[in-house]
Image (cartoon, rainbow, N blue to C red; front, side, top):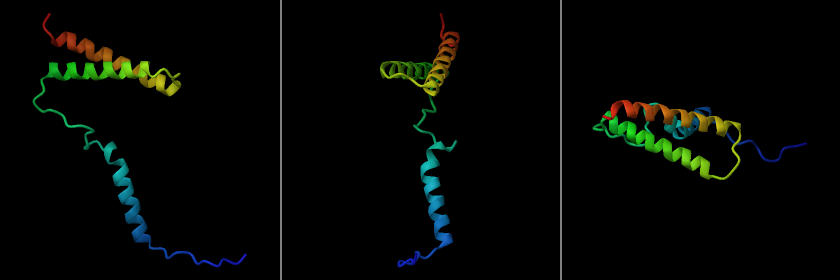
Length: 98
């Protein structure tokens, strides 16, 4: 079979630059130095634990209210979230005066 249309010119340095830009753009949120939301530097330990407990409580509630059957990976993540919530709640009890 004879190919009528020629292949486009290949510029390896330009391809590498485009690949690097795409990787940097899509993986930037996964970088350890790029927080997903701003953190308050003046937050006390007790307030930070209380906020983390609230966030974990919301995550548990959202997952349970979805109404869909969770697959194995989703259940594993849910279990980890519930474990983290238990740890944060226990740490919060130790910090708060009784």
